[in-house]
Length: 77
Image 1 (spheres, helix red, strand yellow):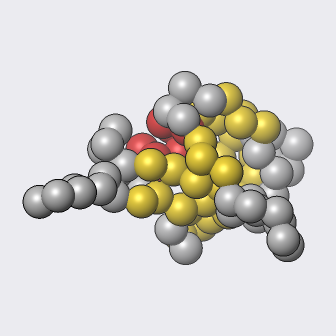
Image 2 (cartoon, helix red, strand yellow):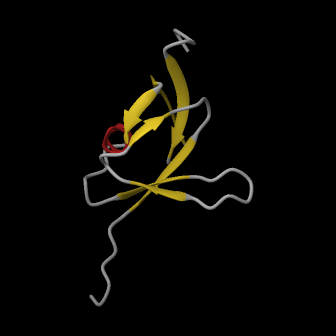
């Protein structure tokens, strides 16, 4: 990291990104070039459940925080 006090490294879909300490869910999805129909989830620690993250949610990020995206579901097709 170039400036430890202003940036953290997060993982999104197994790729590392150096980012500011605060981003929205939409900004995190943009890092991996996912469109707005994809869902974003923050991986839970240990036995904590994963949490859905909305595009407008503002997140305080910590180093090595993990996220993953899920494509839109196509039920009944």
